[in-house]
Length: 416
Image (tube, rainbow, N blue to C red; front, side):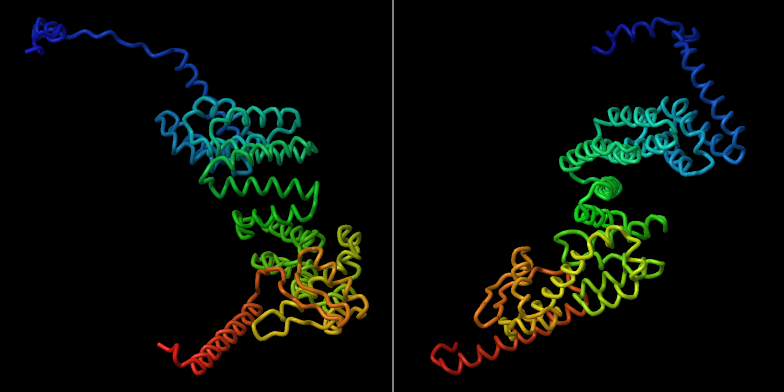
């Protein structure tokens, strides 16, 4: 057989049974030993520097020696969240994590790197570190997008607005080009995007980005201060944002309830009044909270726009109630004037404004002073509005059934 012709077999066969077999030993690299010893000594010094963290550093040392990279990753992520660990993070990363970072999950490594970047007090050093990390993470779409979003927020804090937008655009390309991005990465993207539009405008873009952020990071997952700030900013943006004439989507989030429990309850009441198109309540709130409204530059500079907006929302709400199988879609100007508190001669201009914004569709009869409504902008309906639609559908079903019965009676020859 060929096995017995093997040189290896012949070699071992030729050796006496009692003779010890000799193998060439592979000496361990002294450089690697020195490096490992230096890392362990560093971890021990960190534990001595902050005694409360000594057990954590001892555990890091043990996991590092045993090469348990997953467990070490979990421990490191817990570690970077501790306030007392912050001053040591840069050193821990440079001396310890760099040695084995290629063995860590890319997204977990990105989170660690972002935490480290926040510890740089020098602007140039912080940006340089962030740029280096972004370049390093280019091969992983998820980690790369996460780092770019956090780098964008850093640049925004340093006043680098245009560079911030560049990073957001790069992150958008990564997210759009990959499937299955985690909620964490999506939240990082919309957090960066909303921060940019909050500073740069327009308000409507901030509003859309912030609502998408809440889809991935609900208010309940945010620290109370951040949740309140986000709710307030969203409320102001909803009021002053152009082409935002339906707050139903906003009211589905606990934004209003968050505001109602604070000193900003007046803003929650304003949002409810606008969503209902209630001009009387709006005027009462303006009168009651006049001083607080004047403290908000965005509201103060948009006084006329807010008045127009509440009137248009009143118009859409009024016409919404005229849509249905049993409703009379021909609405007199006088009816609109009464609801909107406008003189009859100004109703036509209001209708034309609504038509130009795409809020309504229909035909204005300037002779009879009526509006024949064919369509009203779709709305995110509240519970009471859904109840109205339910009644209309029941009425429509009853009408169809009655018509069918009449047709069967008139044409018995076609009956089955």
